[in-house]
Structure formats: structure tokens, C-alpha cells
Image (cartoon, rainbow, N blue to C red; front, side, top):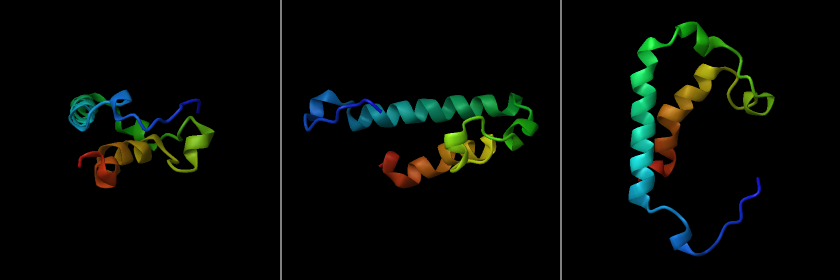
Length: 75
């Protein structure tokens, strides 16, 4: 996708910064959810590429709010 990984740790955000970003992101999503029409979550994912992993928008949302933390994002 065009990125060039490097062994220089200073080129990346710290773990604390990444965790803070994740917490902010999670909070923004959960604050917005009560105002969303539930029918949206049943809609087919608009990206054909992503659809193989997340058939619906709701599938991706569940992943974003749960699985990311289980994969080590939250330490």
C-alpha cells in the first residue's frame, strides 16, 4: 500500500500514543451509535474488497469495537 516499514522505532508513535488514539476512536464511535438507524448495520459493505471479511457494515463495526483489542492493540 505504499508504506515503507523501518527498523527505526522513533519513526512510529509510542505505544501510549497508539493506545490513546484507540481509546479516543472507540469513545467517538460508541458516543455516535445511539443516533444511528439500526438498519444501517445490516447494509452490505460498500467495498467489494472488504466485503469478503465484513459482509455488512455491522460486521465491520463489531470487529472495530472488539477484535482489535483482542489482537493486542490494547496491550
